[in-house]
Amino acid sequence: MNVDKYDFLLNKEITYLNHGSFGACPKPVFKKYQEWQLKLERQPVKFLTNELYQGLKESRISLANLVGCEQDEIIFFQNPTTAVTNIIHNLKLKAGDEVLMTNHEYGALIRAWSEWAKIKDVKIIQQEIPIPLETEDAFVEQFLKGVSQKTKVIFISQITSQTGLIFPIEKIIKYAKEKNIITIVDGAHVPGHIELDIQKLGCDFYTGAIHKWLCGPKGSSFLFVKREQQETMKPVVFSWGKDGDDPEPSNFLQDFQWQGTRDMSAFLSIPFAIDFFKKNIYPSQKTCRELNIYAYKNLNEFFTTRPLSIGSSWIGQMVAHPLPEHTPLNFKSVLLEKHSIEVPIFTWNNQTLIRVSTQVYNDKNDIDYLMSVLKTIN
Image 1: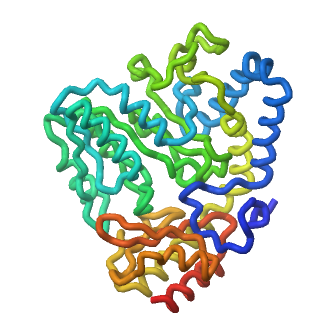
Image 2: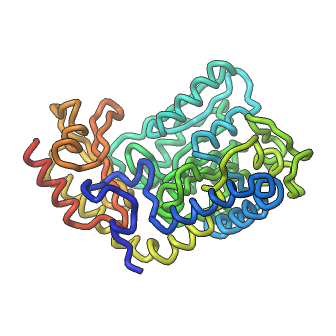
Image 3: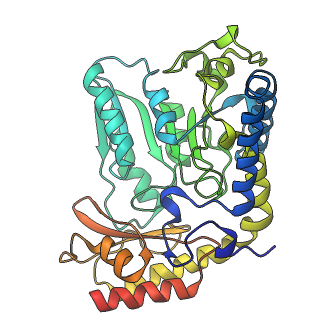
């Protein structure tokens, strides 16, 4: 099966260069998602009390095999923001302790950390990572300058959301383990984007989205919790736990899997989404990345602004680039409403960035069209 834009539910009249924000669901995956919803509605009691948990286990097994961990180290959440929030509210930090992150982290989670830190009197350190990024060693050295004797947690993205950069986090996690610093990785953009082996990374917590690059249904994400950390984790929303219908022997799974009535069809669709990804999307990843590098080169050649990275090793299927200072505030709306191009324009670190995402439904014509429009506006 050759996958193109007609195999997705996207509006065909739009040049869609924003897969990174919310993903896009292929028609067969969406159909499987709806089949689970129908199964739930036809016999809700039987489904939610007897059949649900076997389906969740099959989803955990499928996902664990893909991301490199054990199936009972995974719990499902609607999104990484909710997953990380559950971690934050389980940390046993004291007043004056520090959480270290980069200045490239996802804005909603910076806010989540900051609001919690106000209550706990914990200090959030956003270590500046200057651009353009050039070498892995320079990146690691700069980040670790933010570590102090008060650093108890490192929170870091493996692929950043706004700047679209792949961070080399392996050495940072290794350093943290040696210093007994808890490591939490925001991998929202990683599954289905770059290779992932959580056990090899060695972090304590890892969250990723299935609805982005794996092209699963919206509202499907996961949290990995290292077995040694599971006793410290309690859900923000308590429900029946061990007194409920979940047959799993793990208190950790019992506490998190049932948090009141909700539609878990997106979670149950994960094995199908992964299988579809492996057969129909993964074989084209190299081509998608080459297309993104083509976009990276075009943006660099046209704009005189300094790029976020030197060389293409820092980018996968997303690339962000600073726009000129005079770029109008309504630029995103102009691109969409006048030229039918969906691409994010936003402010980061006092710069206006454009971020291009490429997926199997994109081709060279999409990038060429974007650039032709940018040249007329600029």
